[in-house]
Length: 221
Image: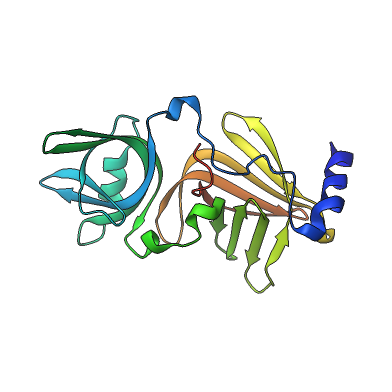
């Protein structure tokens, strides 16, 4: 495995590409009929409503996936009772009534300009943490690592599936041994309070930094 990985890195580094198992959106059989959406989560008449980005219509939220969205909303909502939410589910319409059967909660954050993020659809994964600040953006072109006080590091990567939804992204480019370990588990950002659906651990030459992560629009697991 190490020999093969080294050959991949050496061959593709000048092109800033890697052996990508994450390349492009993909949808499991269990997600058929479900849609990934971003928008505003709000309380209306004592019930949760979801309004997709750039739409006027809103949908009553049914937590069919057991995501605990009501508890997350109550904990994080701002004074206006609104949050940004990144979700997956099924839209149902019957006459004037519309609802969202919520199956997956990718993240909830205090409202901002998230609907206008031009890079979301290109991202496969984003992970970040604090003390010190770090941020990793993964796309089909590679992995870009930003760390406080250091220049951005762009490297190719190889993915290894570990079972139970866990996986590892690794690279040995630029003389560094880099690993990003990701697991499906509720994670709260220690600074912003946002809730994301994965924990993340960045390891660079043995130095470990922990944080949270979520899938971008390039992956629909």
